Length: 448
Length: 169
Image (cartoon, rainbow over all chains, first blue to last red; front, side, top):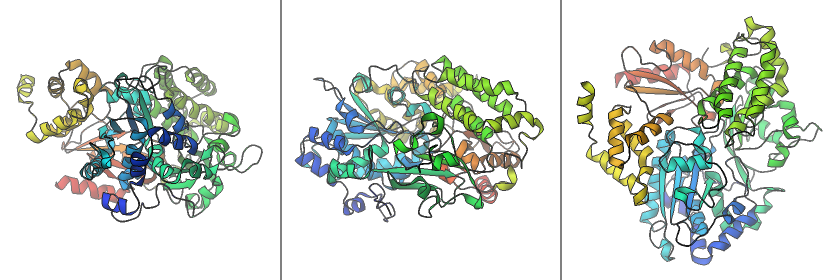
């Protein structure tokens, strides 16, 4: 059993209520911060913790906070990115649904650190039922003096609101999220200026992921140095991993960074191994945007070193033989999975979700989807496989926001590691979508 | 003619107006437009599961903005239905992790049960079948959403049961 910072009390009955949450030690960080610490001291602790953005980018949270501009006469904002839409990722939703106060406590303590007087939680619109859970918890906090004017008699005041999105993956990109919060289409902004200088309503703004913000209370209660002792090297603390696909125990798990990958995938405490006694074929380890890896390259690096659940270990080998931890969305595939079909599915997602602002992404994602559809349905040729890689290279790095890269990487990596499977689809057009060959087909699944 | 009639009838209930005012109060006074997505959600729930051009005009009026500012938002975000829908809108996740657990087959099953394709309404007008991208339920797939509720870990029996229950409502 690893240390649980975020989910220790997740199964305590009534943990969604303020009363139970406080009984379990909740809101101590607010008390400590607003009554005994300066905002700079709170920022300093988060810096020392080494906490890195849990939304996927892994940028140090404390450093991001320290970039926040503080011009006279302008409000500053903290916006929580709860627009969790990355395929394979459902950790923030589970955390907010079960322990809404974990996020709210983090929002209050973090807002104090940043000098924000109004903060927002931008939650994806589909999670309206979670929005209602959060609003109920926020109302409890107002009634208890934890939000509103003069919090706990400290003189610090904060308003916290939840804002629903409208169903657009792109709004998980922080500047698209801010545009959306301003009531516009979610088109990412050109950077610089970064949100730290020009964010919500042109004011200095920090945008942080749910899990990052929910990690702040423990850091304040126990110090940044203590947090930094958890984990390995620059991967400090714990991480929520969303595990899905062909495993025995799908779900959300909190792990200490540094856990061996093999233990996470195969021990009964976590994923419990591949379902139906099948073999481990491939994995997308950081949400759909990161490169796919064959099972053997995921468990061990090309040099044969067993991988650990850290940002560094998963990216060892670069894009040639490594991947990224990203948002920690583990999508596991057994040996019956058709990689072409899976890649087509992901490409269709990115084509659907492209905001259309940059031509390479708007046009390129459509091209990739079409080519992959052709290959998967037995109408492709060998030239298509190279064309696919060619198109992905023309998107990568040529767009305002990272959606272009996120669309390109899964495709390029799938061809890199599973080229024979793409060629098989060209050579066996009559069997390309047929069950039993590479793609498992209906008989293995619940909906046979 | 019908449109003109509808336009005259776009009137939010008192409860919905109270909710709209609550959302508007969350943003700076000169940034009312921020409330556009929350209000579109309220409008969609209020007016039969979709937002007609007349409803969008009403939203613009409430927010003191040009109608085009609402149109461009309503057409960008996929949660807003721009044409009439059935009584129950089934939004089935079709993305990778759900596909690995059988989403394709769930969709086929629904098409055959409802006698309509994705994007269409069932003949009895009760159901609209939609596919959507990842709903953050990857460990509980295959799944679908109906209004604010998630139905997870579905299999054919559970799905049929759910359709039967909804048909009786």
